[in-house]
Image (cartoon, rainbow, N blue to C red):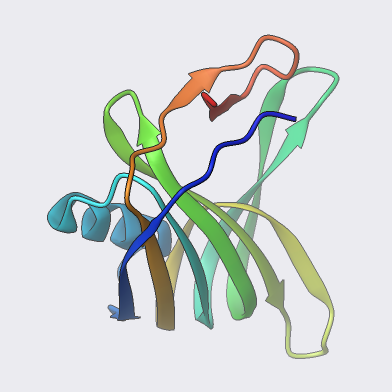
Amino acid sequence: MRYRKVEQSRAFVARLTHGADWRAQIERFAREEGVEAAFFIGLGAVEDAELYFYDQERRRYVAEPFDEPLEVAACIGNISLLEGEPFAHTHVTLSREDGSTVAGHLNEARTFAGELYCREFASPLDRKPDGPTGLDLWGL
């Protein structure tokens, strides 16, 4: 395991905009506020979500569309820099009316309603290519 100590900096709460893309809003907020490293949690509801599942054997993401209204039971993620730009690494658990759930890496989803808490770290985190996984991971 690689690690480093990080100091916490600013904290934000946000209400996401109805009709706008959930993850893109987080990345836009990070650019506007100069957030280069953070942790966030959120909840709300979305429509027309696209989740990614990482195929470990083929080392690529597989997209799964869900063109329906879904409750955001849990959203958790982090912000770090990928090629110099804020990237919101976002995972969600989404629930249907019958209580069944789908979960994964959120690529995009149209926000119905959303609330977010974000805690910034005082120093930036950069993503770097990781040979064993094929993913862009924190370069610690």
